[in-house]
Image 1 (cartoon, one colour):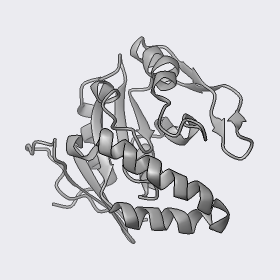
Image 2 (cartoon, one colour; image 1 turned 90 degrees about the vertical axis):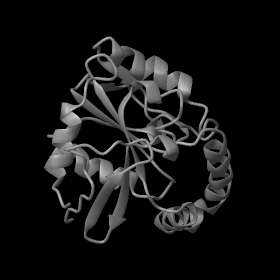
Image 3 (cartoon, rainbow, N blue to C red; image 1 turned 135 degrees about the vertical axis):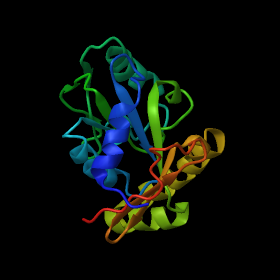
Image 4 (cartoon, rainbow, N blue to C red; image 1 turned 180 degrees about the vertical axis):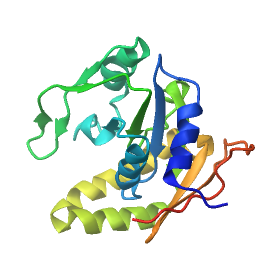
Length: 206
């Protein structure tokens, strides 16, 4: 069944709130799998909803040990219906930047490696997983970032392997997202239960 981005957006809008008044939607997957691009297209289909990039939460020293900061600065305020305030990390300057606000919108997308980790899943209305093999995703990421980031990628791959070995996200995904040159397809995930409005296949153009 083919559907438009608006159909997926409509389904997400109909989900019950999961974090106070907010429907938090996680977009997880291996680094380089297309999470940021897909999140941007989905946010547009949802009417320009906020997107929290976990690259703004992680740091060189805390590639995955950022859970406490995310819960304190983002999840807890949103769960109270309040604006969240966080300081995005600058990967070039290796320090946190100015404070940024995140409003308690009806839908907020959280994209990045670890968006579906176990401590966050109770606050998610829906979890999407970018369906691309790790080696293929990492190759895309390395090509995107260039040779000057080769040392970082060597350390990242080891850290990501450890993270998903200890705290996998894919088994809990409601939907799987596959990218193609002409767009994306969305399928039921391991945790999804097909229903009358279940998105089976979603393909949209660039």
